[in-house]
Amino acid sequence: MNSAVSISSTGKPMTSTLLILDWSCRVIAAIILLQTLFFKFTGAPESVYIFTRVGAEPWGRIGSGVVELIAVWNDWKVYRAISAAYPAAD
Image 1 (cartoon, rainbow, N blue to C red):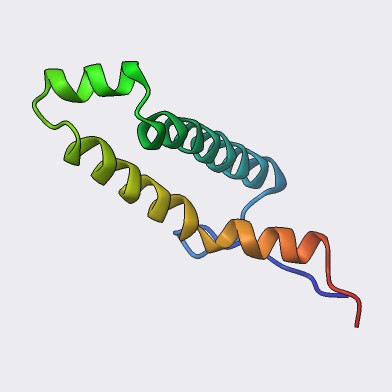
Image 2 (image 1 turned 45 degrees about the vertical axis):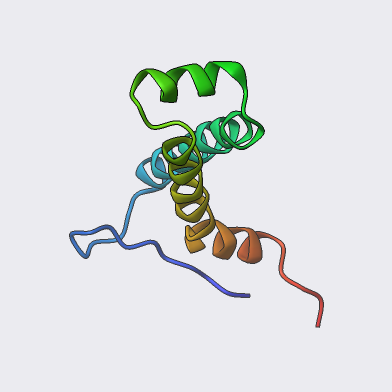
C-alpha cells in the first residue's frame, strides 16, 4: 500500500484540512477553465462579443483557449491523485 505525503511550498507536510482546501480550489479552477473552453472553441456569441470588444477576435479567443487547455492538461497532480485513488490491478 502506497502512502503519499503532500509537502507544502514551505517544505512541511500539509494537514488534511489544508490538503482538502488545496484540492478543492484546484478542482474548482479546472472546472471553470473547462467550461470556458467549450464556449471559446465553439464560437459562442458571448465569447465572440467579448473578444470582438477587446479587438482580439478570433485569435485572442482561440489562443487563450489553447493556453487554458494546456494549463488544465499539465496539472499532473490531478492525474497522480486519481492514479493513487484507483490503482491499476497488477
